[in-house]
Image 1 (cartoon, rainbow, N blue to C red):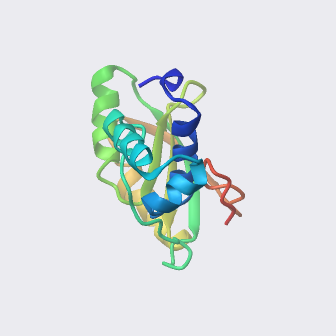
Image 2: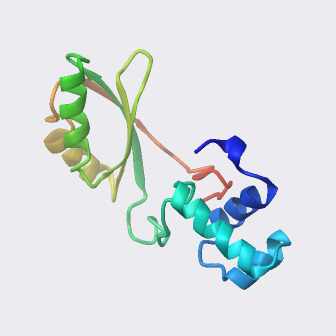
Amino acid sequence: MDISELDAFDRAILQVMGQDGRISITELSKRIGLSKSPTQARLRRLEQLGAIQGYRALLDPIKLGLDHIAFVEVKLTQTREAALAAFNGAVAKIPEIEQAHLIAGNFDYLLKVRTANMRDYRRVLAEKISTLPHVAATSTYVAMQAVKENAFGTVT
């Protein structure tokens, strides 16, 4: 799907849904200025096109006792496709890793790791991240405060 395929109503739907995925079709149609049936059809089309990938509850990690965030630079011993695939597959199995990005730069991956505290993070680093396939070195940066968490500007 290409962004050029979206008109102003589609973009408005995505903006509202990104902020409140539980909004009723009636309220959504009011907010975007379109009647209910076309709004519902557009929403269904956006889902089918993959612009809307799903709906989920946003959990508050701090209230769940998971307020320690570390960003980890990972250097691999090699970056052949097989090594990247092995690393990617292993990373996907570690629940504490919220995000993993292949990076073009002085290191290979940037991981966002969320744990309850530094002791838990050290355990995850030693027992899980450091033992991932092809890991040569890691560097950790601990977040002191989340200023912006998502594309819609939520501050925590």
